[in-house]
Image 1: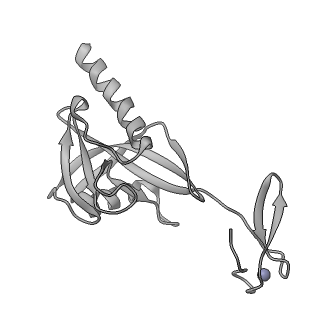
Image 2: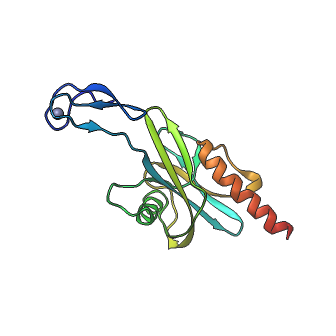
Image 3: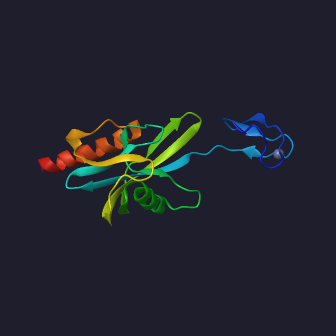
Length: 167
Ligand SMILES: [Zn+2]
């Protein structure tokens, strides 16, 4: 909840808007709607293995996850994906298909995760911003993961790789 109005500085009040209890300004009548944040995650596969990062920031510090992060307000998710992969791993990637999205509620935030399959085009792969290590992992040798959402995305991928192997 927002304590003070960002337009006029008055103390906000709680107001029921539809089914949502939101902060509203009694002076200028502004309502502070709450919208989810958008996150992109990259599934980069090469030779049956996926590129993961060992996180160096909370949440999930010391655990592994897919490269990715928050989309800036004016940024296309494709551009966010390419930017985050480069910042975290040095990988130059292009987004391919969008995989089933994930929806997470954490604390006061709603998060929509857009997982993309991405193609590795090049770059100098190394641990960069907010990352301790990077590594390639096969479906049968997944490291401890930071997020249930990433686990679900990787489970889809694992099934697909195993089905491919069986075909
Ligand atoms: Zn106001």
